[in-house]
Image (tube, rainbow, N blue to C red; front, side, top):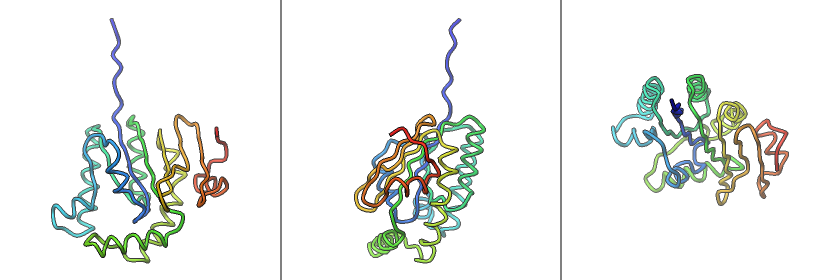
Length: 193
């Protein structure tokens, strides 16, 4: 008798503060399963941001309960989706994260303002600043729960500054992130670079 290896369900999460460039990065990757984005839901159903967020959360919960693959985009500035990922990990999910950030929240404010001037959705400046700081503080926990993590600095052009694969860690400096800043960001101080 041959044993067939069963494939783990998978989640791809594209995370990062408002205005970091998550949507741009998402358009360049292969998503898996259903794709859930509250911004898309808001447009499709002409609902409020909170209603769209609630609907996106309900969809993720339903897919998790069924053990199905899915991809989602999130600011990840609260433990809500981090806890979802932890529960997914307990259910045997393989989790890949692409995290997009900038070196300073003022870049994010300028980008959201530009997006809003071109009929995109806006976010108040105080929320961008607050979410930026909260989101970056959750990165060490996010790294711990994910199987694969790629962190891209998108202050100028996307540049990978961190990678985790099978508990092996790599880092790359650029003009915005030196090694000590990357260590502070990730909480990791042992690298294979």
